[in-house]
Image 1 (cartoon, rainbow over the protein chains, first blue to last red):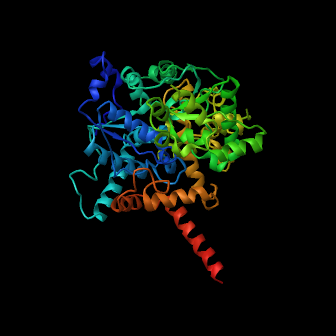
Image 2 (tube, chains in turn orange, green):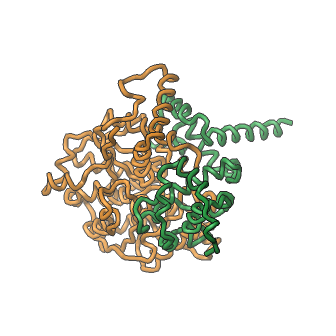
Image 3 (cartoon, one colour):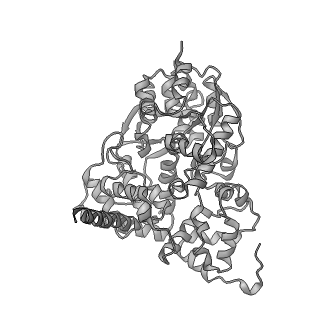
Length: 337
Length: 175
């Protein structure tokens, strides 16, 4: 069985549409992958959805898509075959309704690709199909052909939101109402974007330094600032924050402190799990208690920032984030006329 | 590093792990350069040392399964990026070692991790890890599929343990 790469080939799009890569997406069906943690940061989904609609792209959500289950695989609660079966069911449902799935979370992005990776192993693939057969039997047949089969050469392609936004950056900038007014921005890519090899064609792409976020910040009128812990983990570490909180929060503390040391106005990231870790008020309180330092640097997801720069109503893009330190201050600075 | 002699090499454990996860065979290429440790977030805050763990596996030292160190890995994949050898997948090896550790009864007790119990319960009953997810809940037939897929997985034992704890608590309350 041959497994084609699920990752959208950005180089190919750039070659075919050098002047306007957005054209490639026109007329295609796009689907937003629902990351569980978007619940706490609805601007991550809504901000992005608003942008795609403004760019006149056909965008939807797949109601049959479940959690990616990466967190359970990483904590040894499900096997590789079970993880791949859950992933195949999600891919199968999305493959029916869309051409491209866009992912706002590094964890979900990693899961979608990892589930397919595991299927390259014959034993895992056989076990996965056996599981899907058993589901099919219990479900009393299938609603559409191939519903419970491992997908062979699906048309569906996967792209991370950051890669998409960078690709269409010229159109993106034209769609924005505000700019960053010279704010200093520390960027955080997140481990499962920065260190991922699954989505790369060759080792050079894997090892090259990642600068897309910095380049976007400059385009938005901000100043990217380098800091010592730029490439370090947020501290979540596949639930280390729940299991070994003291050690994990030390990593979170180091990251936040390092960005404050270079006087960044906020930290920008493309992942809601990193955002959850770096912004949760309870974690900031624990940091103050354990490391005797109150850190107030605001943290923003790239999609939320796009929403703010687009002039999205405060209620829609950062409504649930009022407890995040100084976020409203940043909102006011960006949106002042 | 610990002192080992040639007679300490034992491939039995390594072969077991490779038999379980084929990709583990690549750890034989490890040159013990330590780059993975130098760039590791876990190594900065704990005794986690991927180089030592690989050496223990290659020497057949099964005490690694009892080491609390293996539970400190952040699975961030940084080691994969800095490793000068291709295809050594330390995070996958760690997940595999944790599985072995669980099988032998050395792993942490999930019933002590309230958050995980809650997340497992929500995943098996709603298909997500949060209550009332953005954009609505999953159709019941899809939730049923997930429950079926997870048959015999540890997640179900965690879920059942939480139900049993809850019923014990309820019984105590009614007494």
